[in-house]
Structures are given as structure tokens and as C-alpha cells.
Image (cartoon, one colour):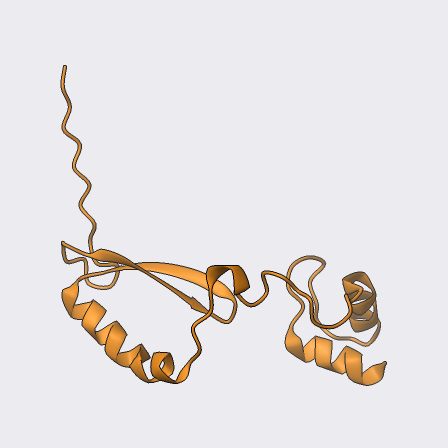
Amino acid sequence: MARNVQVVVSDDLDGSDGAETISFGFDGVSYEIDLGEKNRAKFEKAFEPYVQAGRRISRSRRPGSARTTGPRTDRAAIRAWANENGLNVSDRGRISSEVMQKYEAAH
């Protein structure tokens, strides 16, 4: 028995057919979105000034992929300090830049 499977990619914003997957990064995080021709044009127009002014980097040099700048921080110590000083910080995950700056200023 033969099967014919067809994948239709639709626009993530308006649901229109014929979309393409667009990859982009922001603030060290990579994203993908499926956009049709109309929304892709809007996306490109919105990002154009930033792309023109930005620097292109290779995938191997993506910021955050190889942390060679600065000493490694003790996240457990920062969390303990934050809790002792009444700052809201979770037991796991990212520590906000605000808490990091306050910790650095105190030490």
C-alpha cells in the first residue's frame, strides 16, 4: 500500500499557506518562525536597519557559545546572597541581570 504524505507549512501569524521557516537570534536565543510572503516582507523591513548596522558572526562564534570572558561566577552563592537580602530569585534557571548587578556591587 502506497502512502502520499504532504506537509503544508502555514504562517504562524495569520495561518496562510505557503510559508517558509525563518531562523533568527536575539539576546543569545535562537528562534524559528514560519512566515508567508507578506509577513516575511514585514519581518525583513522591520529588521533591516538592525541587520545593516549589525556585525555578522559565524555560527561557531555565536555569543554565549564559548564563555571565555571573565571569571566563572558561583551561582549558588549569588542565589544564597539574594535570598538573604530579600531579592526574588528562583532555585534554578537564569538569574536576572538586576540581581547579578546588585551582587557584583555588594562584593
